[in-house]
Image (tube, rainbow, N blue to C red):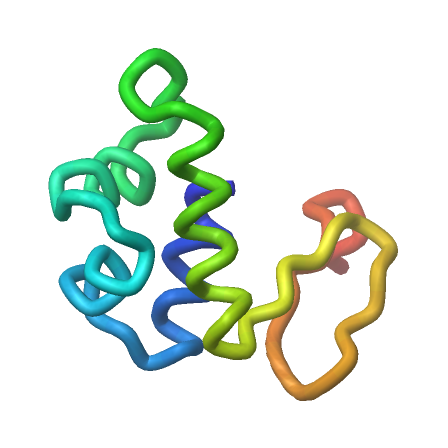
Length: 83
């Protein structure tokens, strides 16, 4: 989720400070989400969902493996599918 949130923020054209304002969270919290490989214990899942919802409100669509975007964007291929 860390990479998806950071990529989503970039696609939305938002700075960390802007996303924090929209999501209603402190900057240090977003830095923990985006920077730590595993933010478990540092940031609640509820807070991660607030960030995700803020990005979705700005047009970001989060995809699970096998889902298709409803508009333009980017996605990562599974590592074993790269050739």
